[in-house]
Image (tube, rainbow, N blue to C red; front, top):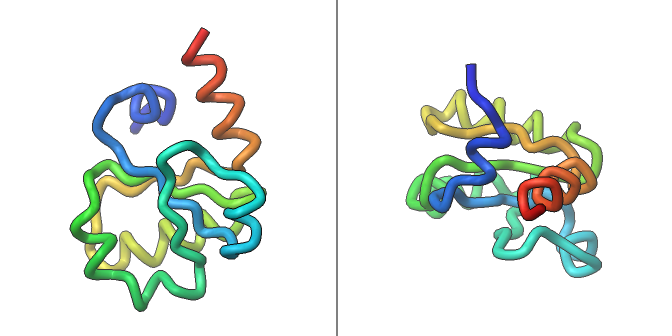
Length: 97
């Protein structure tokens, strides 16, 4: 079992936002990389090279769940569902306190 809060707190991690480019532009987690869900397959090599663990998030958790499943099936380990952006923002703000 993993502790998402511990992963988010750690210095080594990569946030991947799987929302659309337009959603990402309207606001995202600082340092996050935008890879819209429909582009995951096209960006596999780039994703494999990103610093692990990977924390995937979207608007509500649905697209991030799909992305996590696909990446794990493709053999990428240390991939975690961060849920929705609101959940991630709340977690990050509680860590910063």
